Image 1 (cartoon, helix red, strand yellow):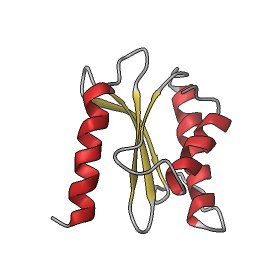
Image 2 (cartoon, one colour; image 1 turned 90 degrees about the vertical axis):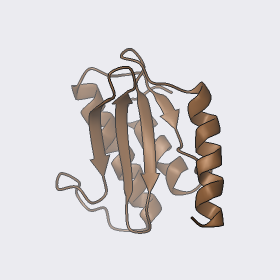
Image 3 (cartoon, one colour; image 1 turned 135 degrees about the vertical axis):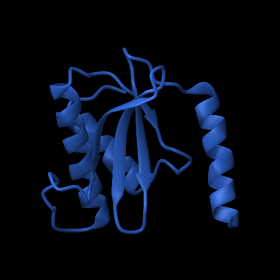
Image 4 (tube, helix red, strand yellow; image 1 turned 180 degrees about the horizontal axis):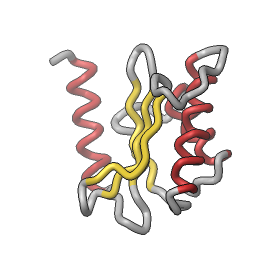
Length: 117
């Protein structure tokens, strides 16, 4: 495993040690790849994914522009699905990434969509 991945894993373990999603406040987890960005809302008590959205999913309407613009759209999409499922409050899990760039854009898009965190 490369130095970047092991560093991210170490940071991720520290975050997950003190952050957990419940039925009342599930966890909004972000994964960032080179091509796309993914978001899942997870109930950690049951270990189930409640809602998910990504920039590569079929229900995502491709937003023209940068990957950060796409991240905002994915954030709004996951917020829309979460509100339809009856979820308003979440805990944000940046998954070891810095709160910057695409991760920050997704969080801002989710807040615009109506999620509280």
